Amino acid sequence: MTPKSTYHKLLQRQIKKVKALNLDADAQWEALLDLVHDSYVTHDRDINHLKTVIRESSSELIEANERLKSAHQELADSYTKEVGLLNHLIDKSGETVQVSSEDGIMMYINERGAERLGKPASAVLGHYVGEVEQMFLDRSVWDAHVKELKEKGPMIIEGQHKRGDGTTFPIEANAYYTTQGDRGYVIAFIRDITERKNIEQQLRNSLLEKTTLLGEIHHRVKNNLTVIFGLLEMQIMQSDNPEVTTILRESQGRIQSMSMIHEKLYKSTHLESVNVSEYIEELAHTIYKSYHQFENVHLNFIKKDDISLPLNKMIPCGLLLNEVLTNIYKYAFINRESGEITIVTSMEKNNFILEISDNGVGIDPEKETQANQSLGMRLIHSFSRQMKAKMTMINFNGVKYIFEIPN
Image 1 (cartoon, rainbow, N blue to C red):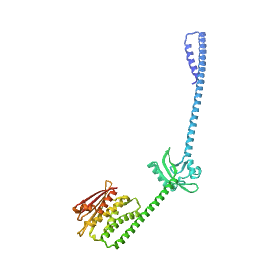
Image 2 (tube, helix red, strand yellow; image 1 turned 120 degrees about the vertical axis):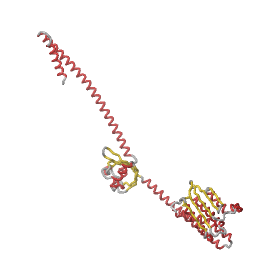
Image 3 (cartoon, rainbow, N blue to C red; image 1 turned 90 degrees about the vertical axis):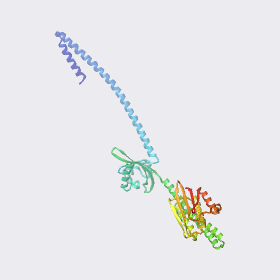
């Protein structure tokens, strides 16, 4: 309803009120004329006021609208600038940024990624990701990859990217799965690891070379010891002195214990350590064969754990075993037709425990001091100190040696 029609209704109501007054015709006519005049004057004044208010309000609205448009433009310019900076940073970053749809269609690749592939981005986008990443040539592998990303979250994978000229290079990718609306995407940040792979290969080649060299050194040391062993054997064959023969045999035993260690290291894939239980058993059998007169002596081995020792402890350990067993064969079974030697190996609180015992005659208490000053016992104590081992000797129903060797 317009303001004018509203005034007409108001005027009609006022005319009815004038007619209801007890006025003569002339007075009533004059009253009606005044009423109409006042009504239209008021109406015009209100209309003018309303127009003024509307003009002022319109001016304020126009100014506010201009300010809003200016703010919107500033915001749009700022957003465009930030997006442009972000795109620039992504394009010039050291990593490839790649976005693929859930079904393996490449949706985005940055400038760095296109450069590494040696082809424009337009030649990649819209194509299946397996045309670039060789591990996804089979689409079932891509499907499994997407499923794993969904279930386990972001992961690091290695692969091979194919350049435009057909050559490939190794890559490492940080990949994760995300959604936008009702669609899923795989986003990957990919780096070229050619240099790293080259360094790794150089290290592997260097390690192989050094391992081969160490193995050859151990083989040659073992051969040299064998030559020395043979020379001693020739001296034994030419000697008529039993004491000299005994000394040379004992020296052969020491050489043999060292030779066996180098032989094991030469045949082992782990040159830094040797399985001590196997070595002790083999060495004990070798020493046993050197004493043909003790065929009725039985060797018992109890291996509680698989234990390895470094080379700097294996050599003194072998020499220690040689001296202990030599002493046992020389003194434990005098005037005995048979006997037993028991060797136990185990681990306790990071210590290698070596126990060597016999059921022989034991050490005569009157001769114990003299026995402890013999060359064999002095060597046993010396080798124990080299290994920083704690040595215990029990002289009861034979002799029992216990060595606690820190691993």
